[in-house]
Image (tube, rainbow, N blue to C red):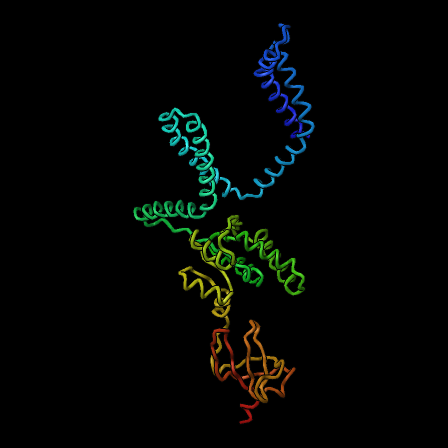
Amino acid sequence: MVLKKIVHLFFIISGGTIGYLYIPYIIRLLDFNVSWVESPYLGVAIGAIIFFVISFWLADYIVDFLRWIEEGLVKIPIGDLIFGSLGLIIGLVIAFLINLPIQEITNIEFVSKVIPLFVTILLGYFGFQVGFRRRDELLNLLSLNRKEKKKSTNDQDSVESSEPRPKILDTSVIIDGRIADICQTSFLEGTIIIPQFVLGELQHIADSSDVLKRNRGRRGLDVLNRIQKELPIKVEIYEGDFEEIHEVDSKLIKLAKVIDGIVVTNDFNLNKVCDLQGVHVLNINDLANAVKPVVLPGEELMVQVIKDGKEQNQGIAYLDDGTMIVVEEGRNYIGKTIEVLITSVLQTSAGRMIFAKPKLLEKAL
């Protein structure tokens, strides 16, 4: 095991160094009169042997600790790690500048050594936390600067085209599945953003003990796999998270504000909240209603009556796109394909509803 050998080597080198510096001094304190015993090279050998023996006892614990640190660092998103490291560097630089006058203006050993160490640790910690936790705001600031530069460039060259805003998918629109077909038709421009917290929610649904929820979650994961691997569209996984926010919908709205993106959903409530908070939203239910065939009163259609309606003697039929047709006096035609005459069309928030009556009755009149 390479890491364990490195730990042993570190102990040997450390032991040899300590033996070189201190063992001759200890031997002189013990008042040995043999000159070769005070040789620093003997101290190197003694120290290296002692620490090599100790390393057999401590090496496994140190290797486990290093593995734990390695796993933690690997799990941290690269963006959080970079901004946290930048914050740490800035904190250490500020601590160095503060410690210079402290060490020069005081002669007290405690103040000149302990306080600078405390300031360095404290500011380094705060710098890392600020860089780590405020990563999204810093990214937003950088994106704003880029947009301002791009705006000034556009003022000089009006021919230059603007880049499409990224589209952020929520959990409901992924489970719905129609988003994959919409992406395939190239109606959505720009990068498709799939947040990591949405993937986590999908995985939680896919692992549910409820069969219906489990199937919905697995279908959502299949849809994402199709979008990412089969469709000619740019897809990015957003690794960041907003730890202070617990609800996924609120995180989506926050992310849309940070990256100036557009939320894609079919959730009516999320749509309303986005409108209230000034976040642009695309609702695929609105798109589906908009592309349904236009049917006008007086037109004739061939439909199959499937079931009873709510009112007496009503029958229910459906168009290919799922639009419901209420056929007056259509109960007697259940299971049959008949020609109907459209009498009225009602547009509601839930969709479009068409009222019709059998053309046979119209001819009879």
